[in-house]
Length: 144
Image (cartoon, rainbow, N blue to C red; front, side, top):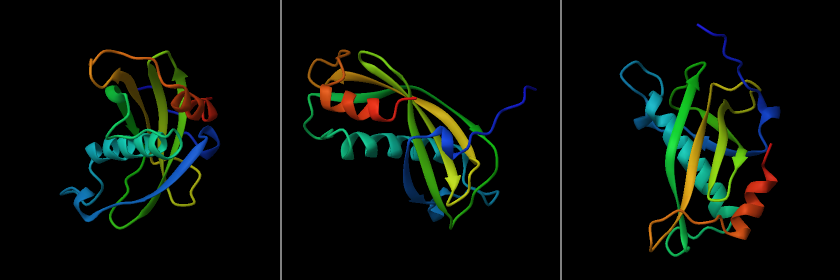
């Protein structure tokens, strides 16, 4: 098995605070692996809404997840305060690949990290569409 480098905070450009929820824990007493994907989705969309001006109800484009992946390094549980680091690894014409990591509050090493790809599509036509300028500008700010 190949050695996996655990990223630290310096690898990410933007951070959001989150808390684990009671329902996040699985029967083994730690946050279930699939929950990390909901954290990834929440962080990416929150950034698009708050920093990029995306209106999820009426914007001409919407972002669809087409690919994602996650590496897990250490378990977290409920209740815990966590922070999600966000960056843009690749910015295309109609797609963006985010790098996202989850950290215990105040800790430097990630408990999990991964990627998440959005393809932007025209809301009405449901076909790939260029990323609008305001969103692109916000994404450029956190690009590696």
